[in-house]
Length: 125
Image (cartoon, rainbow, N blue to C red):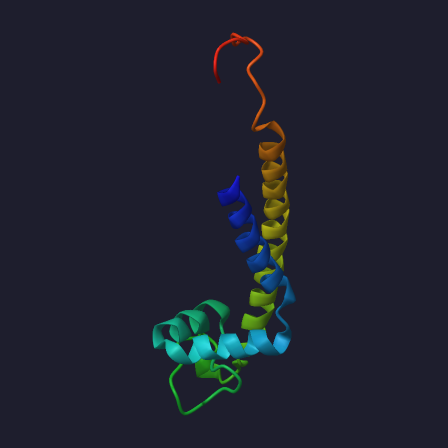
C-alpha cells in the first residue's frame, strides 16, 4: 500500500508537470535538446521537412527535401506543436492512471485486515 501510494505521488507529479509546462519553458527545453545532438537535428529535419531551429541557414547543410529549393521553414514551430500535443496526451493519461492507483490504495487500506470466513475462529491468525 505504501509503495503504491509513492508511485501515485510520482506519477501525479509528473502528469501535473506535463500539463503545467508553458510555451516558453517548452521552447527552452526543445532548444536545449536541439543544440545537444547533431544526429537528432538531422533526423528531425528529415522527418518534419524543415531546416534549422528558429531560422533557416541557407549556407549550412540540411537533410530535408525542401532545402535544395530554398523553401524550408524553421523547425521550432513544428516541433513545438508535436511536443505540446504529446505533453497534453501523456499528462492526461498519467492523471487517469494515477487516480486509478489512488483507488487501489483505498481498496488496499479498506480490505487489508479482513478475516477469512472459512478459517477456524479459534485459530490464531
